[in-house]
Length: 324
Ligand code: ASP
Image 1 (tube, rainbow, N blue to C red):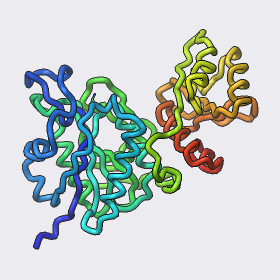
Image 2: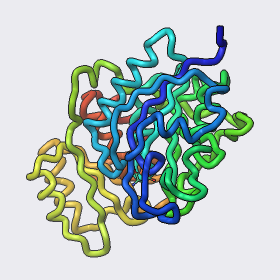
Image 3: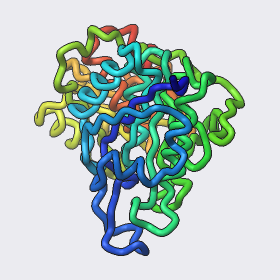
Image 4: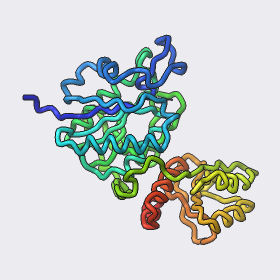
């Protein structure tokens, strides 16, 4: 009788399952073309790490991932984690929106059995494809006892990251996924955690807030460049946005001519969050109560998800916790 852990491999597509016409082509390919058995076949030794059961959920490029997919994925992950014969879940995903899916799952899943996302920058058909090693290491991390109760993890390029911390920092480089503020939690081979994940927000969204939901409230991100017209805000609300995240210059600095539009949104009870278009650093909470709330450590894409979930849950306490 095997004592190997039982893991579920949930596939969603991405470059890790991508196929190009030429092995030299790393940009012109179809993401999500390969099925799970082809992914596994490319990774010798996987069967010595864990007993894998496959669940092929999606076959998409992660640029097409949307909130309805997140909710479906969450339900599948919860289903597998609840099975007594499942010791953890590994999810393959595209790198383009990996940070959004990882952050969403981090907020919705209480720490427990390991949940590990992985991805690749080169399609499976490429010379020196990075997917097979990333998948091997993701399975090794998910199979390791130290990975339990660490929140959602991301394993790429030899690193273990906290899912909440990652961003995509390069369009084409192999080391395109990074955690600029906190760095990696550990190394994937051999599996070693240098420090524990920050778990204050892990699983903080009450499960009943999303029960039966197939969509999340619409939240739009508006990128504010020098001289951008504040009419954008009213237009987003007219089109049905229930919340707005502003990707503002600097420390979430609201241009003077946007204040009126922000006030109008507030009068209509539309939540507005000040985030930043700057790659690094927090947006500080302001004492001026007429300013929209700050995003804290969250970039615009993550602030959008936090606001969607806060609106879905409808509790002000959750908002305060998400934008701490
Ligand atoms: N466009 C691809 C995706 O996100 C990129 C990748 O996986 O690296 O699915």
